[in-house]
Image (cartoon, rainbow, N blue to C red; front, side):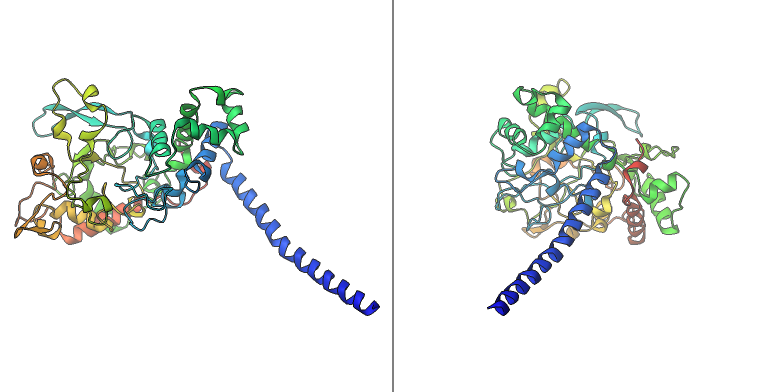
Length: 423
């Protein structure tokens, strides 16, 4: 019997030892994770920290499981698709929920002004016209960053919350409710403005330096710390050349400036590029479904200049920043292109070789097949490099396309401590 007792004690002792051994790495991992999180959040203001908590909170969707970060992955320049079966579209909180447009990157979006109409001058004639600019999303439907935050929380295809109050209640009963009270006061959750204030906290986080680190090779070239390779320099020259890539027409930078902040690579304007229809988008199985972009922006007629032709904006989508463009595919508003090279090649040969990009219909190439024919005249065919006709020589040859792509890869932010970022 004594032997049996000693045997049982030995078994218990060994089991206890293995439990301790198993627990030790877990405790070490938790400590490491906690330390890493603290280091990651160092330097954030209380309001930015509150915004980060909301941004990463997977309990804020219905059903739970989807956060802002799920589709705006920090490791992918704040863009992604949440494991969607369709690369171009993000998967929502419901398994069958997919969007209709590619998820835009949130990197550098805080620099976009509010949606407005700005004067644009024709370089050849000197004539000016009012054109839309700024706002958030591909169609500018959110005036500013706070409104951009609010939309996905309530969108049935995204986080699917039934109301603003439902979101507020989840945060009120969550782990960081006290942080919200510290930022906005003890009665924050008693206010009708709670939802807007919490959205502004996320906007503050999205405006923090980690979303615009200016840490790419190109930024270090501007600072005099690095040099472009011969191929990259060739691509940059072609990018700027008004008779070649002419990319600065929309993806602007101040040529005489060495400040990274003066090179945002967008003028926040809108353009109709005639993108091919993406057959992978489920909604596109219905021939009647058409995404007209900017002209369908809610309330546009009320803020447009008097007499402005709203239909002239059908097919237009916002010109995004090209920062991190090499790691934020697929490309264009509908994600129709998987590779960056295809996008540049499309710009160069869309009109010289349309059969390369568009399907056949009734024996002919169906150009601009994702836009009703009555809006085809909205497509940009005047500016370089789009000003070519079938059979003409493209503005860019294959080698020049490669060089521009090489330059665009220098715009990818490299991992850097937030403290290095410039404001």
